[in-house]
Image (cartoon, rainbow, N blue to C red; front, side, top):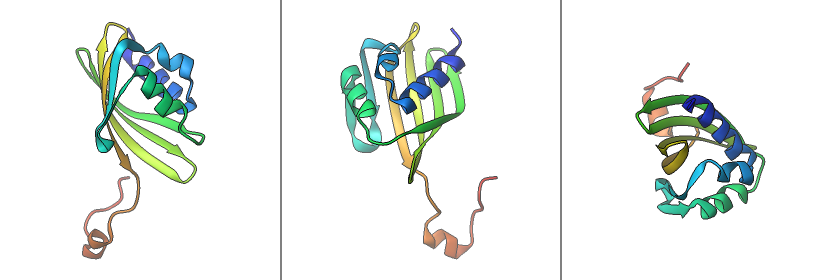
Amino acid sequence: MDYKKFIVQYWESIATQDEQKLRGYFCRDAYIRWHNTNEQFGVEEFLRANCDYPGNWNGTVERIEQKDDLIITVTHVWAEGMSFHVTSFIQMMGNSIKAIDEYWGDDGCAPQWRTEKNIGKPIQ
């Protein structure tokens, strides 16, 4: 299986909120955990949470690492007025997703206290 292609297509389906395509990526008993909000979803609940989320979304996979049946991704997800980076640990079973543990972070400026200390610089 071409995991890179699988992951890029998966994130395209997430961004376009394509419920039919998304359903095909998962094992029936898969679960998805969003640790930032302390939520765990079954597949159908995850599809509701993703596909019913308001707005028009875009996404770009910035990094993919694979170790055996674990795929780790860093993805930039954005919509008008919102931008996030998400790190996903995707556990595969054969050609399907068995589990996902995700960590979402809001994109934004460095906090004022660090700016005042004149430390750090923008990532080039």
